[in-house]
Structures are given as C-alpha cells and as structure tokens.
Image: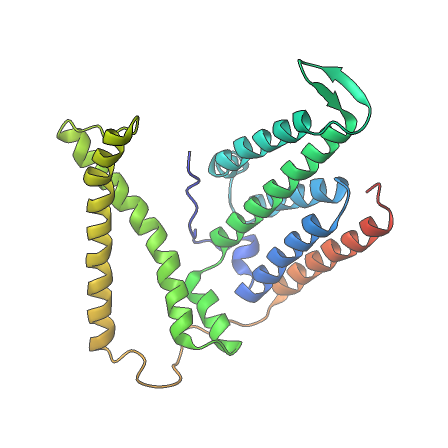
Length: 257
C-alpha cells in the first residue's frame, strides 16, 4: 500500500519545465490549499494536479494507482472529521450525529491532504534529481548539499528494490516474516531489516570510496554537464502559479469559495 513514486523520464508537460519552475508550482499548490478557507479552490487545485499529470505523459489510471494509499488515508480523514465534529446542523445519524460542519471540515481536511501529497508526488515524478540539485547550486547552495539531495532521492528506489529482493529470497527459503506479535516483529527485523540495512551500508561505503578517489569536495565550485535554461514551458508554469495565487486571494475575500 506504500506509494511507489520516483522520477520518470519524459518530454511532455512539466518534464519540459525547469526544476525551479516546478518547485514554484509546488509552492503554489501548498499556498492554495493551506490559505484558502473554502473547498472550491482545493477542488480546482486537485483537478489541476490530475490534468498536469496527464499532460506530462502519466495515464490517469496509473497516477491514481500510485496515490491509492493517499486516497485511502484521505477517505479515513474525511470519515474521522465527519463523525467527530458535532457543531452545525444535524443532517442524519448513523449511531452518531453527522452535521453539515462535520462534512465540510472533513472535505477540507481530505482535499488539503490529497492536494499536498499528490502535487508533491507529481513534482518528484517530473523533476530530474540531478537538474534539481544543479538548480539549487546555481541559487547559491553548496554543491555538497546538492549532492546529498541527489543521493537521498536515488536511494529511495534502491531500498525499495533491495526490500523486494530480500522478500523474494525469503519466499524461496520458505520464510514469511509477518508481524503479529513481539517475537514475529523481532523475526521480521532479523530477516528483513538487517539484510536491507547491510546492503545499504555497503552501497554507501562504495559511494564514499568512489567520491574519495575522485577528490570530491576538493574545489569550492564545480562545473555541470547540463545547463538548465528558462523556456516557454517555464512561463506557462509561472502562469499557473499566478492562477493559483490569484484564486487564493479571491477565495480569502469571498470565504464561501
């Protein structure tokens, strides 16, 4: 049920935008859902995420499958808010009173969670980690920290693949480390967590030796193999950002939005 999200190569939609523009758009989504008191702007932001994912070459069904855990947890948030908030007019009862304010707050919470997580996943899917690190370096961040960011993003699919490999090896040997009690938890840690941890530390040691052999960090500045230039798609993304900000300003003036 854990969402499997990583960078996907492509030449459509947001893939053509620079990492800086995609980051600004992500911040625009966050501002829109956190600053707006109503739900219409949140619904529009969620629809925009799905549209951008489709235009970026991701099939809608595949994108929904990627965020299925987010959808399930958002539904749980909606139900929890609806049955816990008692203010407002009672609409119906299912053992507990369901009010209009409970449904409204539940919808706001669920939409806020959906937009934040889905837009963040879309950002990861369309933004090349190497280009993103180079963009941060151009903004003045030391390249050592940019390289740490690249390593962190690269290690997410690595650990996922290692976990899959370990589980397949366990199934071949007839080991099923399911977690049901404390002893099974200790067994799962022994047969799953430790092999993945040792494999990760081995990879880290190899990368450290490679970096040392190439004298990483010797010079205060470094060159990049691929420059990122501001293009037409970046201005389109800026237009979407202004649309989100403008909708937020209007929604704060007219609270029913």
